[in-house]
Each structure stands twice: as structure tokens, then as C-alpha cells.
Length: 303
Image 1: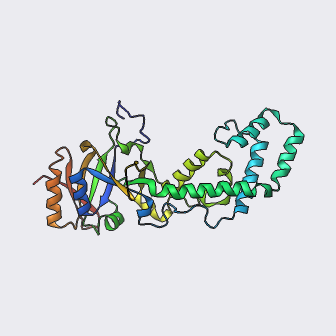
Image 2 (image 1 turned 135 degrees about the vertical axis):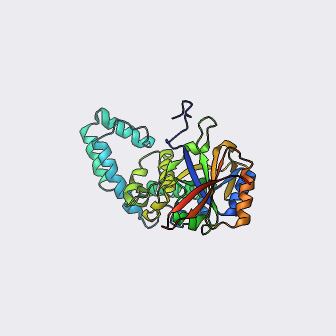
Image 3 (image 1 turned 90 degrees about the vertical axis):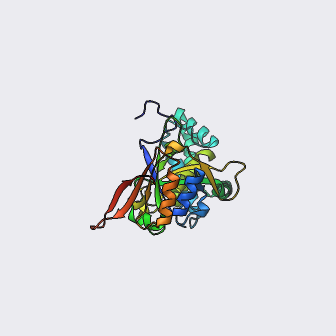
């Protein structure tokens, strides 16, 4: 790995790929920008949730939270820094030796979480409202690991008629791609979709709760999408950004190559090759489909 490793690097990859229609690729190459979108614009309604705590009852969450608190009081963790202030104070007290009668009263109170209802309900609703305000402001860049996903050529590169751009992760210029994180495709429900998961979130401080919700919501997808091998870079819109997307610039050296699709029209192919002349360091590849139904990639020169 490069000796000038950026402190912001979160992975060991040297490059990523981005599928797109031909006209989008032309705009990207002309403007030297990539589109970062709010989840509101995503094509999959099962992707980043627009609403939190759907089809989970508050009572189930409260019971789960009470059970989690009981475990904390009986077996206090070494690190309590991420707990909410009031909970941290009590758990820290339990660590140094809480009077047995007080500990017993706390555990008995947790056996009936009904008194927590109003306060916890307010906390849950506050997180839901915060999430609603965050969704439009999120800016997400979606990437993948290779240029030979047949389904992605079909869905994202307009039926094989588009292109794939390859981007380098360059430490010296502190490329935004260095902060990309892998999307996972769990077979079990992530915690933010369960009462138990929300029961734990009620116990931690709000910043930690939002961090956990944000990471799970933006970096987990259903197993059906695992073929995409997706990675994402997540940030927030700038104060002067409007709408639900922002076109952020990339550095010229970040563009490593273009892969022109097997069904890309001749005019689109010629336009893309001409635009690649502005990136003399980058390579141009033509993708075709071989007789045994595999992708064949051949480097071609500029016109």
C-alpha cells in the first residue's frame, strides 16, 4: 500500500467502478463531476428506509429496552461512554458497588417498564423525526467492485448500451473514494428493524443512536442485491446545495478507465472516446460478449 496513506482511508482497494447510461457518462466526463444522491431518488424502495420503526410496537421496544438495561446493571461493561448520560451514571454506580437493596429496586422497576412509556415514546418519536429531516440531506455515491456484472450492465447502463467508469482511490489527493464502505446483505433483519435493536438504541446517547441507524440504513440491503458487490460513500449536502442530488467534482487522475458497452451505439462510442482524450492517462476499453456468453474486454486507442 502507498507510503503516503491517507488517514481517511477505510479500505485496501485501489479502485472502484460506476455503471451509467452513455449520455450520463458523457456528462460526467465533460463536467468532471459525479452525482451524489439522496435515497429519495434511489430506484429500490427497499433500500434506505424513509421511515423508522414501522410495524414495531412501542411496548415491545420498551420491554426489550428494560431487558437490556437489566443485563447492563447486572453485568456492567467496561466502556460506558456511549450510553446516555443518565443510564451511564447508574451503570457506573453499579460497577463500583451499588447497594444491593437499591440494585434490587432498580431490577424490580425494570420488570414493569410501564413508567418509561412517556419518556421513551418521546425519545423514539424524536429519532423518527430526526431521520425524516436527514433523508433529503444525505448524499450517497454508489460504486461496485468490477465492470463485468451482467445484471448491472442491463439495469444501470441502459441495457448494455452505456458505459462503466473506473476510478482510482488516490491517497495523495485524499480521494473521497478512500472513505467508501462495503454494503452488506444480511439474511437476518438488521437491528433497526427489530424491537430488540431499538431497545438498545434507547439506552445509548443520541449521537451514537443516529450513527448506528445511519450506517445500518445506508450500508445494508436485502440478500437479493448481493450480486452488486456494492460500496458506498456517504456524506451530507452542503449548505448551499438544493434539491435531492449534488454533482461533486472529482480529480482528473482519479479517472482510470472507461469500459464502453457491447451495445453502445457508434455515435455514443465516438463521443465517449473523444471525451477521453481529455484524460490522456486513462485507458479506453471496449466490452463485447464472447461466444460462450462471457464478457470480453479489449483496450482500444483514442480516435
